[in-house]
Image 1 (tube, helix red, strand yellow):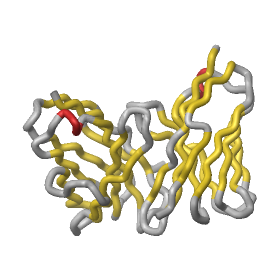
Image 2 (cartoon, helix red, strand yellow):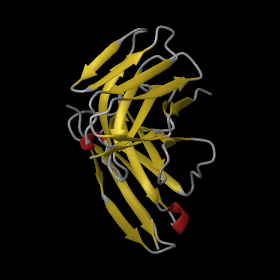
Image 3 (cartoon, chains in turn blue, orange):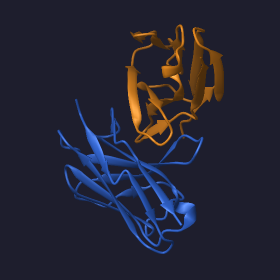
Image 4 (cartoon, rainbow over the protein chains, first blue to last red):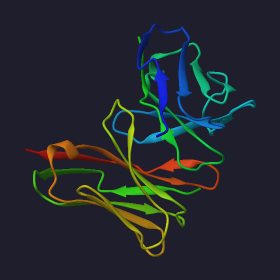
Length: 115
Length: 109
């Protein structure tokens, strides 16, 4: 089956630093990857849609300059949280799929803690 | 925009009891997915429903999509502690994927 990995699984950083999270599709090529954020006891909220070779599409209210997304290849998308602050602490999950918004395959998530 | 509302928000049941979780869409569903998650971990795909009236089962979990394709239910028979977690329904919106509000299930041994 389709496997999506994320790295790192956990990261703790100091306020003001930048953190990069990788999302990889291990056994298939993903033209589209999605980045989600999840706060405790809440559902997943879509942050942005990452398309290979083009700019990401951000959801309303998501700062594109703070959450930089790069989808340089069909198997890798990265999310960089720039100048992280404690309120950015959350669980970040990526998913990968084919064209449009068909069935997606989810990564195991990355827990970010900003001190 | 399309929204998915789940009920109940949380549920505590005794081991062995049956339970049902509902997912209601504000618009017609074209593909409804059920996932299980333990917070801090990834999503586990349970099943996908596409046709009105469709019903699928996996082990002790059964999911249905109503004829009008605006509501789905997830039923667990003879619940076990291993069923505990967060259940999320998901659906394809017009151009993106959306998730339900989630149902937190706790099963008491």
